[in-house]
Image 1 (tube, one colour):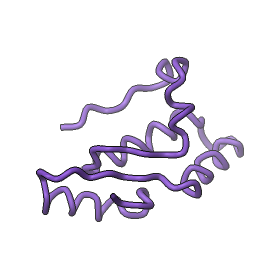
Image 2: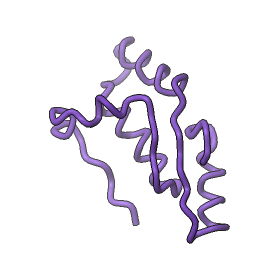
Image 3: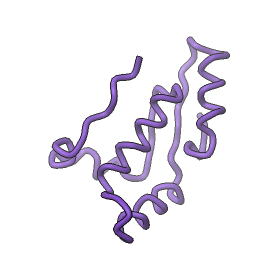
Image 4: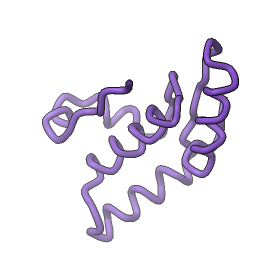
Length: 89
């Protein structure tokens, strides 16, 4: 597990390269999510869009299991109309 996730995207990617057959979990700590919420509250971006973008970052870096503070919000059906996650190749 890599915790916190966003500052260590390079470590996640390197761990995925070194151990491609092992599970790799990424955890977004409350401070990371608080930064996203603060930016949305300041009108810099939309909360839903940035929450999905942070999840995409974890997936693109190589994380297979994601745990983050906004998970309850993301599970709400109205969030899915905003954006969709990228296809991980």
